[in-house]
Length: 114
Image (spheres, helix red, strand yellow):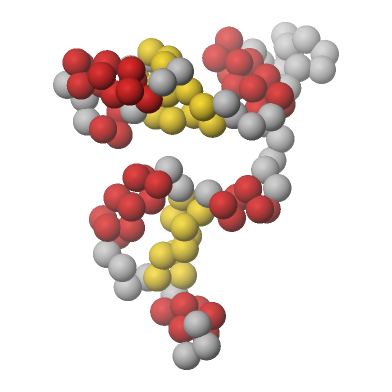
């Protein structure tokens, strides 16, 4: 499931979120995309919105999402050589909705067989 958040407003459609963001005069990064893949992630998200804490949470409530398997983490990380300017790497990663993993030039050339 994918939903979008702009200034504490939730939208099922990206176009609606973008229209609202423009009405408020906010920059494009004010539109946050939230992807929920499992029931555990949804439960943790909703409990987080409600402010549920461990002492008063009902038994069986998921307060933190289950740690993602390695393939999910790899899918959401972009490897960037350390010689790429930081501002370019951050802009690209933000546009793609991914995190940055910096790699050295030596790692990059050894993977390419150079």
